[in-house]
Amino acid sequence: MKTDLRILKTQESLRNALLELLKNKPLESINITELCRLAKINRGTFYLHYQNVHGVFESYFEEIIDDLRKSYEEPYHQTNFNIQNLKSDMIIIFHHVKRYEGFYHIIFDETNPIRYYYKLFHAIRKMMKDLTMNSIDYLPEEQMEYFVSYQTNAIMGILVEWHSNQFSTSPDELNEYLYNFSNLLKWFPDQQGDVE
Amino acid sequence: MKTDLRILKTQESLRNALLELLKNKPLESINITELCRLAKINRGTFYLHYQNVHGVFESYFEEIIDDLRKSYEEPYHQTNFNIQNLKSDMIIIFHHVKRYEGFYHIIFDETNPIRYYYKLFHAIRKMMKDLTMNSIDYLPEEQMEYFVSYQTNAIMGILVEWHSNQFSTSPDELNEYLYNFSNLLKWFPDQQGDVE
DNA sequence: TACTCTATTGAACACCTGTTCATTTAAAAT
DNA sequence: ATTTTAAATGAACAGGTGTTCAATAGAGTA
Image (cartoon, rainbow over all chains, first blue to last red; front, side, top):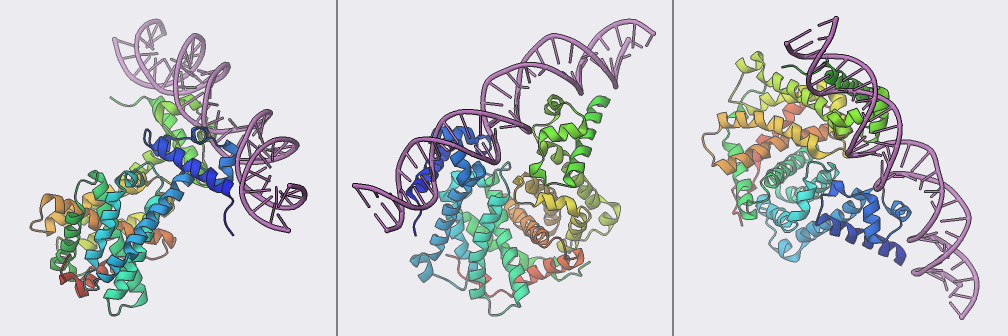
């Protein structure tokens, strides 16, 4: 069964109003009253759908993340799927973030809840797990999980750094760096050393 | 010149009131009015010192992070400084987080601003940069910055994972994991493959 | 001790929040 | 087309927010 048209209309109005307001002011300074005023929605109605302004933003973010998932599942990407090289697949993420640069500026903005960061993390982790399972012959279950988290976090670290320089580095450069880093770790003098 | 005693008294009252309230309710549900009521501070006075409840929490967090910095600079640690092994130095962080476990539960809570995550990130990053510069002969400036963030966030990821299992793993085990990850990368079949 | 600064106070203000409830409106079902 | 169902509305509520301002009080200074 499909959603009541009135619900769709209300949610759409609120989202459009939010995107309109975001052109001129930061997310954390937008309040429910002005959002409803612009959307021509009764404030009480707002609370039937969301708890706060972040709820509206989050539902939009979910669609953006769906777009990332779609890029990953794209036919082109699938046929060029290269189980020899995890890293080359990560460029999809860099291109995605670059495409929605203005949006990700908000996601990584220090005043916003870490929930958004976690959402992105989980989306990327899912891809990373998929890729890793296809690349490694065997790894004990627990170690596999940790390793996937480790790799995903490293990518997230690159995104944090990227955000802090206003996404000025190119996706191709980032991908190149990422490739270099894993090699770098191998050359590291430390890793065979005594632990503690 | 030293700070006016009245200022110290006000800030101290607010901090104590916050810690008291935190025993019974989550940070995001504490409002300024009740905080001031408990601290016996006029609400207007609050605004002379902070913008919101997070400001009070943040000033406390800064001291906790100073404690982490101190552990890192400790004489014992300095003399045992081992440029051969980045990882063994990271156990300091695990012990620190474990010591302030209740506190870090808040830092990683998804409703709180990512600012706290970044604060910890930057503290750890400073150590990581220090250690990395001592371990790697040469890496171009920009790439070095990304690499340090890459490594730092891998640590952060372990902390997030640790938080999600209520800090039940022991610091020593975590350190063991961290050690394993870098070895895992070496076994990887992919990393020599062609990059796009 | 008396004097000077300045932090704190209390009152007041317009505005926002989160919730309730009877009423209106419009979509879905028959 | 009519009925049924449920979403949206407007008004009202107690309480929180962020700010101003004159008055008070307490810390630093001479």
